[in-house]
Image 1 (cartoon, rainbow, N blue to C red):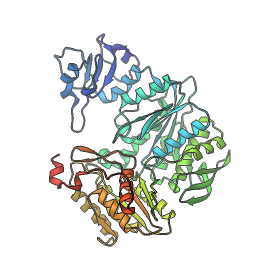
Image 2: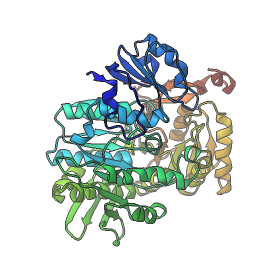
Image 3: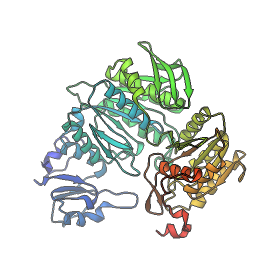
Image 4: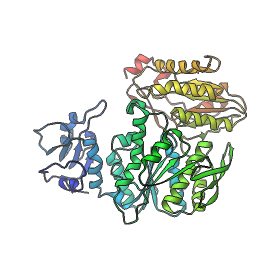
Length: 525
């Protein structure tokens, strides 16, 4: 694909530069290492890296033009100065790929917890309805039969990657896409040009205070999904422009209900919700309930567990029925077709006499609902294993330890991406939270820095009928110590620990520097 640089600015909604050079562009990159001949290199300032420092490398690799926000000159290729290259990137990428979102019905899903599950539920409903659909989530991008990994620690993919995925979907003949969006993605303008038709929020609870500064700022970033519905251009296939919000999420509901200026619906467990559930039955293998609105009543069952997944199913049903006109019975069939989500309440069974679960719960609310779900799945004790990430929201460290102390019988505090912070320091903050709620170190909670050893220890504590939940990593494929990403899969770790515990063959425990290095050693890299 080739485009003239000037063509990328034809429908540019921001301040348009004058006297654009007639350079031919063959691709877009924000990393100088991925630049190829004819690429447009967009230099952006990050937390620790400034793309302007790599302009020379980008030109050496074949860049045909550069965009940045510094007042620079003297390059052998055109340099265009823009006020906000990061915001500009999403519109330039959309233009380069010929505005793919305008040719798709785009369903956006956001929230603190449950957005990946809800995205997958909507996708399964679309498939059940015979709709040619794709999906972009924090786990992967699904384009027809092709499944693309979106990275180790990715939130919403970068703007040019999102547009490239959408273009691939259009080329593959797809008509709909489910796009999971994060507060990072909205704050960094990664999805501004995605022309959303339907917007769904799962909940907005405590998370990312380190980046947003306050709950109100965090909520406002999420709310941009709903304001984006107002600017979506008319599409040949129509514009539902429907906002769907969680009636039970007390902190966000009133704000969003007043904020949304287009059509809106709400869902929840209470009878006051537009779409609600009655007759809920919970088990260790799934949930059953009846979904009711003024327009329909449909029996609903899912292989997912926990009350929070009843909410996720309701969100998906509301989007499908009221946003896309899908028959409620077909929507229920789609929900039942979802076996599970990688790393979301994933049961790891190798013949042990207790239940072991791996879940992505890495926020106070997500840990709360995971432990509550675990409690409903067993008559025995609930044993939790979790950590709290370094260089991220520090307040939640104490909150998560408090939550586990109140809801689990036994808690094991361990590593979760300490990065360049002291792991011992993080665990100390968590331990203080546990003690504040009556936790007794060595009796009801333990600190075990190495995550593999923490999982092994939990298995030794477990008795027949107990449930062990390893929370915080879920589907992720690495853990960061210092500035290095070490291969790590919690599901593999649980299998390795179970194999050792049961004395059977199984995978080896993956290496983390906490196994044999001091903090000083791994912090140095």
